[in-house]
Length: 111
Image 1: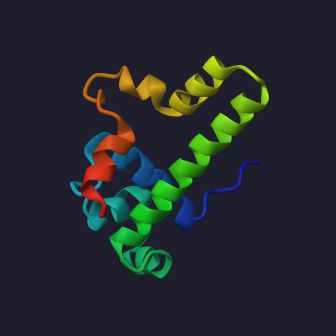
Image 2 (image 1 turned 90 degrees about the horizontal axis):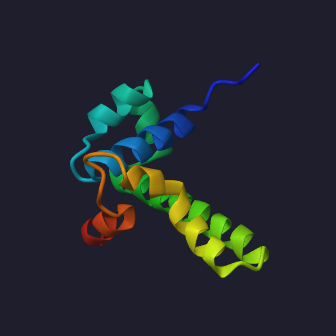
Image 3 (image 1 turned 120 degrees about the horizontal axis):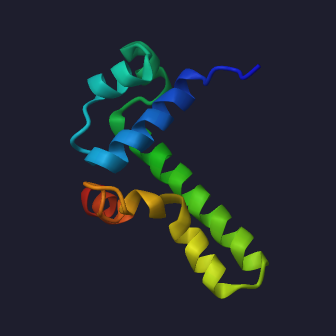
């Protein structure tokens, strides 16, 4: 039996999907709360401000990319290491409307 995701995990999963597809600043807290199926109080208990959710999201994305690169680098194949870093989001770049690079947009908007 699969356990349900915690409210914090649901918020991060929802943020990952929405931030990537629509951009960080275009997604309001109300939408994150609604789509993650949590209350505003729960949101603010886990993330005192939207910026805290953005930081958690970027840290999780960074860890995912670093893990992929380290795993591939351990195999000794440089080309595989490069593809591993691009891999987690590579298929998203090919979808209509999602052709931009994920960190490029975020880096310009987050101080």
